[in-house]
Length: 192
Ligand SMILES: CC(C)(COP(=O)(O)OP(=O)(O)OC[C@H]1O[C@@H](n2cnc3c(N)ncnc32)[C@H](O)[C@@H]1OP(=O)(O)O)[C@@H](O)C(=O)NCCC(=O)NCCS
Image 1 (spheres, helix red, strand yellow):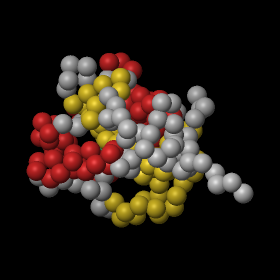
Image 2: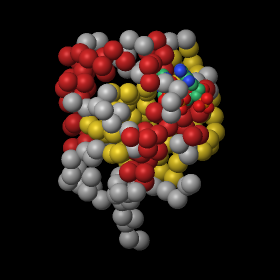
Image 3: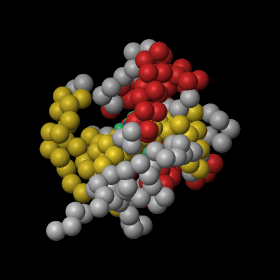
Image 4: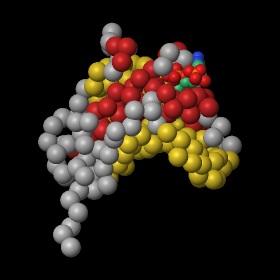
């Protein structure tokens, strides 16, 4: 039997720099820059982001190390993280794709939005933009995400961005208040 070719040819992403992506309503998704370290660090002082995201930077210096890891992640075709910005340049949040599997053509999505920018559809619009790039130009076939069944706002983001609910992973994640069941959502190429 002939080997099945990978969905995405290794090397075909990193041959170009991580893209800047235009999103609905004037959003611009761009790679993180060293000057974003203070706003990124401030985001992780928010109790909701602390609660729902497992890893926290301990200093702006560590944030800059994370930015370097993001840069290397793109070069090694492992993942990508974008600053979600208003068209005036203000940072509003973060959207990321991780765990690139080029053979299967899959990746996992993550997001947060700064408290002052919540409730105006920033996260779903950013997720729609990154999905259009990933399932289009980049050649992924399936994007998935997980959130606690107690995180209703994140569930709304997933549904509004076209990520169908596929099921509940029981007791799948540990947060500061114990174990949580997790919803699994996915969007595949061709979905509306
Ligand atoms: C979840 C999160 C990314 C949503 O981002 P957002 O840009 O505010 O998304 P939306 O504007 O589409 O709002 C989503 C839901 O949040 C709730 N919401 C609305 N206004 C809000 C506000 N001012 N503050 C908090 N939540 C609000 C509503 O339930 C809304 O759903 P609806 O539009 O059906 O009413 C954001 O609240 C966040 O960063 N939370 C903390 C970190 C987190 O949960 N990350 C996801 C981990 S899986």
